[in-house]
Image 1 (tube, rainbow, N blue to C red):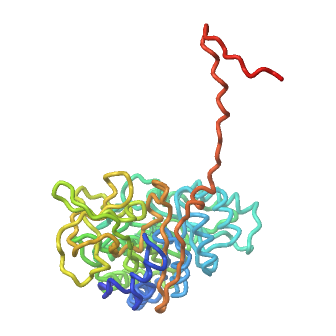
Image 2 (spheres, helix red, strand yellow):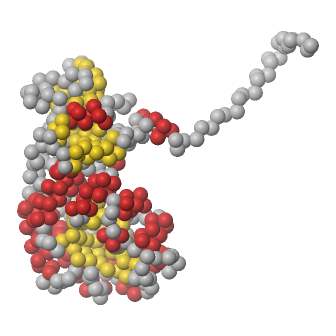
Image 3 (cartoon, protein in one colour):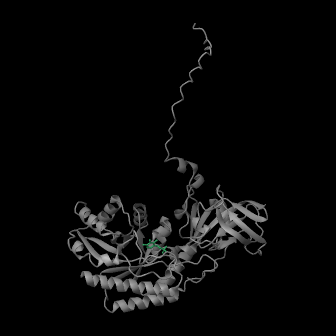
Amino acid sequence: MTEPAIDCHTVQGVPVAELADRYGTPLYLYDGEVIRETYQQLRGLLDASVEIYYSLKANPNISICSLLHSLGAGAEVSSLAELVTARRAGVPAGDVIFLGPGKSTAELAACIEQGIGAIVCESLDEVVTVDAMAGTLRRATSEPVRVVLRVNPAFVTKGSRLAMGGKPRQFGIDQELVADAGPTLRALRQVRVIGLHAYMGTRILDAADIAHNTHSVLTAAADLAAALDLRLDLVDVGGGFGVPYFDNESSLDIAAVADGVNSAVARFRGTHPDTRIITELGRYLVGWAGTYVVRARYVKASRGEWFVVADGGTNHHMAAVGIGSFVKRNFPIRSLSRPAEPAARDYTVTGPLCTPNDVIGKKVPLPEVRPGDLIGVERSGAYGPSASPVLFLSHGHPAEVLVLDGEAHLVRRADTVEDLLRPQHLVVPAAPAPAAPAPGVPVPAGPAAP
Ligand SMILES: *Cc1c(COP(=O)(O)O)cnc(C)c1O
């Protein structure tokens, strides 16, 4: 996505200040139009045969999922709650894939009974478990259960902030082992292995790396399918498209990404004209569209540094702390109350937690900040509250607002104190027994019995 021209104090013409007053802060604000543009731009550039699935992990809000479904995305889920979210958002079972290294029996049963598009199995034991379970469950269809094998690639990932290939991992089945899995797969009764999956990592910002990964995954899938004598109906090539957060990062050139992916797909099509190809994307589809809006509570100086103590912090936006970097780098942070004013000084923006690590921006140049001002952490639509310790200090989940066609919708209200306390059970210790009198101390006489 080219940098969207986000007018930082309004969203689709709706003033952020008005939304902050109406819904309270801290608040996650999502611009549905940015999600739409991001999706449609990518859809327009990618080969039409490449299916786009939305990874709910990045933002599991049901209305975000519904928006992406309305645009044509399938759903990639990794928990029972994400599966239910996708289904209630309207995604048909056939357009859902379920992935994750430690699926529970209840999760596998739901996948099998609902007949989802594919269960992405991360070990051969899991495939065998699914096969055994499928024989005992009532299923929506009599077709075999569709399984995709997740491969832990032998080749090394390029360009990812989280390398996935060539290492011992809990994810997937080592490429070397998949090639030898023929006997196990031939013994399956209820399961049909329809294809292969590999995920090469996240936060990739170089188009050439994505092209290389896509080509490598497609080639490995073709080789493995040949070795296994498998009809390759589907390959999930992962994704991992990044969003730049820090000032040493630049935007993904999405046209170049699409060119690279399309030419890898074209080469693969020479031998596999009918194989479905899926790319699963989380961050890229929603990251640009979100702003974390906090309100300054106190502004103070401490030993020569200026601090803005805001009403929300890393409890809702852990990523803003800086991802795996030794040097603290800041997300794009702006004053939403004085967007036109020049920077007055550097402020360190902190939240309400009682830990010195609760810093969402270190030495951020901002216009004069006064208590009550709104500050926005931009490009925060992915891995926000759901990837943060929202229960820390019992502040709870923040409100989430989605602006769609010029209208704001509260798509999640903030947790209340009651929401936080309801699941807890109060155990009151028995009242302590009255202390025995010390020896030699006369016991005072009680009132005389009448
Ligand atoms: C986390 C994850 C995704 C989504 O990653 P993004 O970088 O947010 O696009 C997709 N697939 C797998 C297997 C994942 O673990």
